[in-house]
Length: 235
Image (cartoon, rainbow, N blue to C red; front, side, top):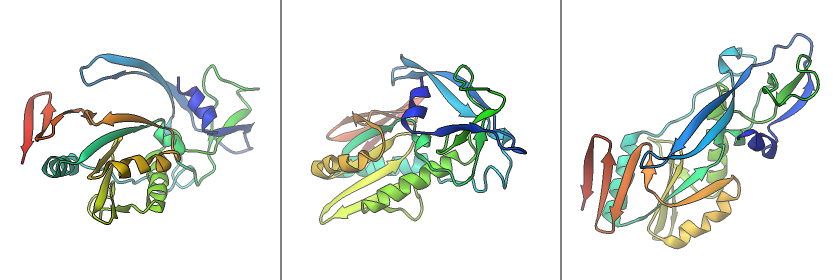
């Protein structure tokens, strides 16, 4: 249940709806999370805003956020195989809830979690929430601000790829659904735990399942396994 995440991240305040203001709607989405074998790991309930009820210029202005491509992922994996890099994966829990909101947005209280009079009391959002038109953009810029403060520089072609050098040591950071870390130095990976404290994350260890791609690896070759075939990267 993602309601606990709302409270933990201090996503809203319950306030009276100002006169003349129309709140954005919300609803519950139910889904299952599966592992690389297709087995159900857990059932999830996520609260999302009804972004289609937002008014441009009032509830949001900009919505664009960069998205990394699968071609970029293939290049990173090729580098991992060629240079025998460490490849780790991190899961950012409720990522969009980390984004700050520039606009004043009022949202209806979620079903079954109502405080006071549902007709007059609403949620004044303090953080971004899934479903808002600007949610992805706000999360990206929050993430960019934090990683940049740790010395990472974004790629000019793919802004979701970051690189940091420390002498002969380096580390790639790729922002996807999860976060991939590729480095030639294990100590740099461990040092990033300082950065991880800025967000609630789960260390998934060696990368194994990314964007629907199963990654099988030994230290002599990297293999990308797709549902309808296999692509091998060998050096």
